[in-house]
Amino acid sequence: MRKFNNVMVIGGGGYVGAVLIPKLLKAGYKVKVYDLFIYGEQVFDAVKKDPNLTLIKGDVRDIKKLDSDIKGTEAIIHLACISNDPSVELDANLAKSVNLDCFRPCYQSAKKNKVKRFIYASSSSVYGIKEESNVTEDMSLEPLTDYSRFKAACEQIIREEITDDMTTLILRPATVCGYSPRLRLDLTVNILTNHAVTNKKIKVFGGGQMRPNLNIQDMTDLYVKCMEFEHDQIHGKVFNAGYENHSVMDIAQMVKKEIGDDIAIEVVPTDDNRSYHVSSEKIKKELGFISNYNITDAIKSIKDAFDKNLIKDSMNNSFYYNIKRMKDLKLK
Image 1 (tube, helix red, strand yellow):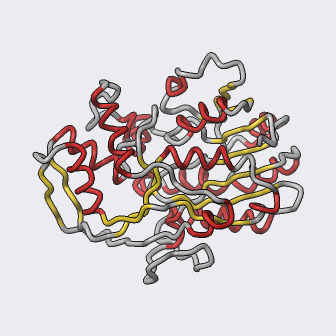
Image 2 (tube, rainbow, N blue to C red; image 1 turned 60 degrees about the vertical axis):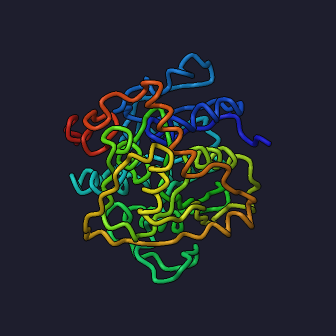
């Protein structure tokens, strides 16, 4: 049951937001999207005429503007960040300013403006490399990269700033996969599917590393559901959201099975041996959330988009690659 009417999605113009926003609108919410829209507003073409949708072009670091636009908002889903390790490494100062420095003022603004609910998108990468077979929410955070360090630091800010006046939840999603109108082709499942369709060849770096994944349909369904949970169910809590843990080689084999037996798989050495298995038992037990989609569904959704000619110049178009778009736009 809906508890709010007005939802703001900060950083809602990206990969996840492009799938989430139509779902929020369908659920009856009035939705404000606060984003720089560096991938364009066309990702919302299917819903742009909806009277309940407001697109606000704004920089998350512009706290004065953000504070003004938060007014009247009952719930916030905070997705804003420069995503993935290579994009962060391209300009560490820029990434820190976007992913960390402005987070505390943003959270404080939400409290000041009497926002009732705040959902923060962290990452399962905050755990680093674990020896344990199942990584649970109570384990230590040992982030290995600036991207994951910034996520962990924002979680700490929430712990320092949290009050009972604003229901606050931290989610640690696995790597998201599947088709979105603002498609990313720099994520494991999506990368392998793109190469299989385009080049008839998959290059697997290593292959034995375990990678947790979550279909974008499940991820966005979870965010919508987070608008409905009771305060005591989620306030001050942290939940993993992963469900599917497979080796990179297993994912490559899934892609081959869906795209065609003529797909070649080449294995090459890698220095990236990060491997972890994320447990989603807590979110299943406490919130009743289970996945309804899987990696195979994600592969099929991207293949279907290729078949419908929705994906253009998939190997080179910066629209599909965060780091390429950042370079093109020379963001500061």
